[in-house]
Image (tube, rainbow, N blue to C red; front, side):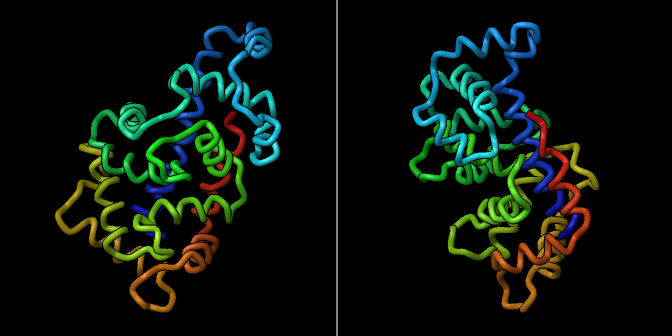
Amino acid sequence: MSGCARRCKHGLVKFAVSVSKLVTGTLNKDKLDDDLELSIVCHRPEGLEQLEAQTNFNKKELQVLYRGFKNECPSGVVNEETFKQIYSQFFPHGDASTYAHYLFNAFDSSHNGSIKFEDFVTALSILLRGTTTEKLEWTFNLYDINRDGYINKEEMMDIVKAIYDMMGRFTYPALKTDTPKQHVDAFFQKMDKNRDGVVTLDEFIVSCTEDENIMRSLQLFENVI
């Protein structure tokens, strides 16, 4: 995978870690009160046991995540505008709105224009503790903007440009006019095994699993919560 593609994945995982810290941040004020605070959590999602079975989080972790989620989003759902505002906090020197739009759509599993706690924790579970295949499938779906089962060059160009906009003046190396196209060409040179102009999920997974750097990056944040 090209350097830019690796940066896509790193930025995505960085956001997952950051959001998990954001929603659990109130616990950091006083570590000695953690057990007490957990014991008085009164707003819990329906089917907590079901979420525990469906994700890689235990009941205590789900309680912490839900309490933080409700603190940040009292209505219990996150719309796209709120999501963009939260995400932009982690990239203050650039314009993260376009990439946040793509990311929001990936989190919005029901495609109804909002992210519920169940959507949030399911995606977080995959990004932080999912299998290699689960993580790569989720990332592929992020890049597959029109959700037709393929990544084409136009989609990848949109993603790359969104990442450079997000990184802003701290982009390194400095962005040149033809840099996004170079990254996209490198991406397809590596990923498009049969040279048909699109990248399938199978091609994406095979190419990523062949890259030691990508495999190493997938394991960095498995136990951040």
